[in-house]
Amino acid sequence: MIAPVEISDQFGPLRVRGNDRYRLYGEALPAKTYRLPVRNHTLSEEEERQFLFHEKFGPPLSALEGPVPTSDDPAFDKAIQTRLDAPIWERAYKVEGDISVSGKRGFVYINGRLFQPSTAEKPPPYHTTYKRLVELHRRRFAKRIELDEVLLVRHTLGHIYFHTYHDLLSKIAWADELGIDRDIPIVVSEKWATGHYGRHFVDTDLFAGRKVIFQKLDEVLVCKRLYWLRTPQFCRRLLEVVANAFPEEKPPVEIGPRLVLIRDQKTHESRTCDGMPDLIDALVREGYSALDPATLTIPQQKWVFSRAEHIVGENGSAFTNIVHRQNGPLEIDALIPSRRTTSTFQAMCKAYGFTHRSHILHSEPDGDGVRAVLGGQSKARILECAKGTRGESSEN
Figure 1 (spheres, one colour):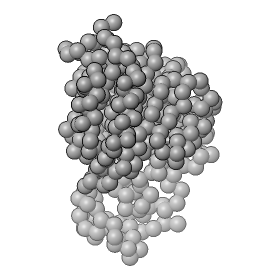
Figure 2 (cartoon, helix red, strand yellow; figure 1 turned 135 degrees about the vertical axis):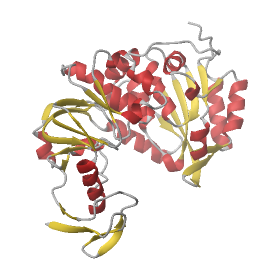
Figure 3 (cartoon, helix red, strand yellow; figure 1 turned 120 degrees about the vertical axis):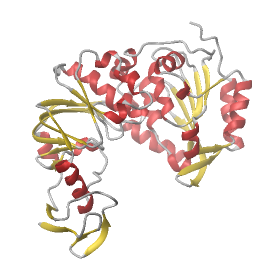
Figure 4 (cartoon, rainbow, N blue to C red; figure 1 turned 60 degrees about the vertical axis):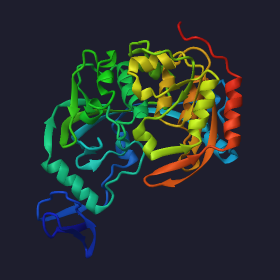
């Protein structure tokens, strides 16, 4: 079935069979009529499997030895267990055809159709005719990078610190393990590479001897062959390769093995926690080091977190740094807003054999963010755990 799509003027409304609720929002589209296929826009799972060259399933995280993550909410405990019981799988694709990779989010299109795994298991955002039209415009009229073969390690949320380790750098480590030719160019987004820590990542041994393509937001990558990898979740084997690629540097100030994490101003503006300053003060009196990881370089963060024994903090990307704690025990007490619960770091701690306790805090919307409240009972439980840990010098 074909749906006619009319553009009344360059920045005017988009009309689809009499429905004018779609608008261009400043997208500079030529004033003409497009005809787009409504169905079969996305490759089916069967069609995707023709490009699969490696697939492996493993036991769930719940089968591993070590403590089970806990929380103070029985319903959330069930959600954690569901994630731990999910099977672990990995897939590697070698895609061939008329391939294009969008600059903004890194989505992959084969012969004009969306390659679903590239959406990181999330519903593709271009299902509406309007959004598909905008994407069609970007692909047709954007600047082009033309290559024969590439290794795509971009992630749709690759600019986020957590996904950099788990869904970007781990792909490079796995590519070496799979024997993919190191002469094949690696494609990353320029936004990621020029971000706060981008240069630290690019300068590691993972990229040594490789040609790296930095794709701009307004560029479309065009190629004939593309490797796309889906690494196993929380794969300690690969994450240790990633962690070992970073050098280590002692911070200029003394930081002990017991940490209470504080947030930078930008993050604090979108996610606030009433009562957190009082908890920080109480933990500092117990001998904890108050730390904003964003003030440290990656080598300095590695030095600190590789020696950590107990970490208290609001749930967030900073916990990704536990990948550097490869030896010895670690306990985490995470404060999690009830409106933004996640089982990510609980599952990661299970993979590493760490102890993780979730403290679910009442929260309410606050503008574009969320405001949580640290109650007296949660504070008392965290302080009780803090008194049960032993702080030692981290001079080793």
